[in-house]
Length: 121
Image (cartoon, rainbow, N blue to C red; front, side, top):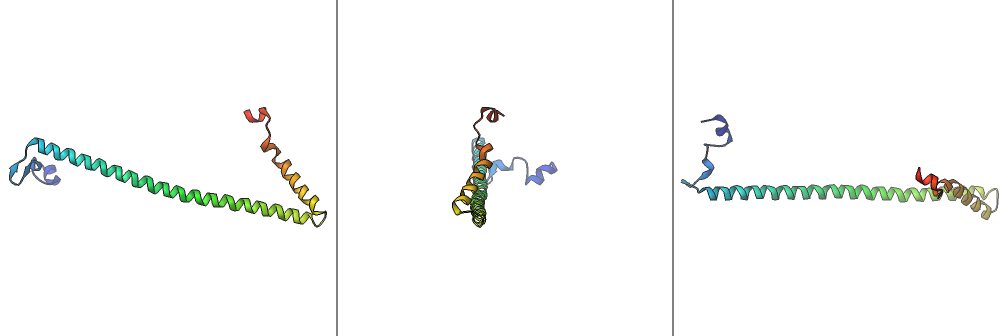
């Protein structure tokens, strides 16, 4: 007998014998099809579990990114208030806040330009 057959777990054709009797080919094929179906179902279950795990990781990363963005906006706002408070030492409060607003408008102007040449580039 071939060594690879022994290593695989027995004599060639042993799967077709059950309880001392030879099983019909239809029954053997039915078992094979059932085993293949179960293997496919198991692979689908594994794929679903992996997708859920990846989705939960992505959701956690998205939450952290959103929190970081919100905190960054708060930090920028507080820095602008700090600049306005600093300017209030040298000019009236309304002029200091107006100056900060105007500087922000000038800095943001290239970002909000609607020039068709800059959009097409």
